[in-house]
Length: 233
Image 1 (tube, helix red, strand yellow):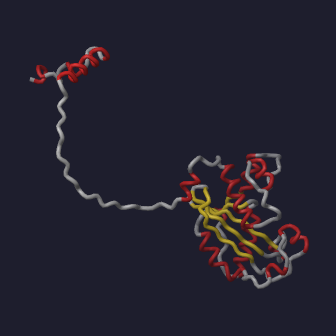
Image 2 (tube, one colour):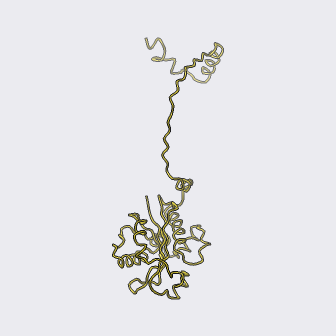
Image 3 (cartoon, helix red, strand yellow):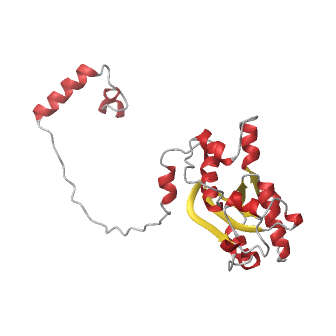
């Protein structure tokens, strides 16, 4: 089961008023475990980044100067997403921004049937509690000490762990299995003829075995028909 954990950073809160994407990151999961494959790009939003947005994610106009425009990375992003389910925290926000960017470069919007909103899952599981990413990390024992500010690729990595815990937790050995790529090994075995070796026990050994069996097993089946010579005649 291939899924993608996705996150964006933007110049503001509403793509309909001109806000744009300035960072997009995506991490691949197979059977709920990260594979190590990821997509990440900082993007020139073709507009100024407001100071209040910079205080949240840390990006300034200088950080995005000279970076590719969304239209330049759109096809690469779509190839990475493929047809997998897309997991995001407050997914309608990220989908709305990506759809607006895709529309600008004449690409179709993302299929909403692929959307998994981890925030909605958290609210259903922990009603009335804080369910932002930091709160979920603390609640579920996910180390978020490196999260000084919003960062799309780090947030994807943290959300992948949070999502796994919310879906039932990691089973021992699965992480190791996920890191090992499946490999088909073909072995050529040379046929070797072995001479049969007949071992005949001594009379003393046979007597000792019969005494042991008689003491341990009463009325053994192999002494009854059809196993006895008389019964098989």
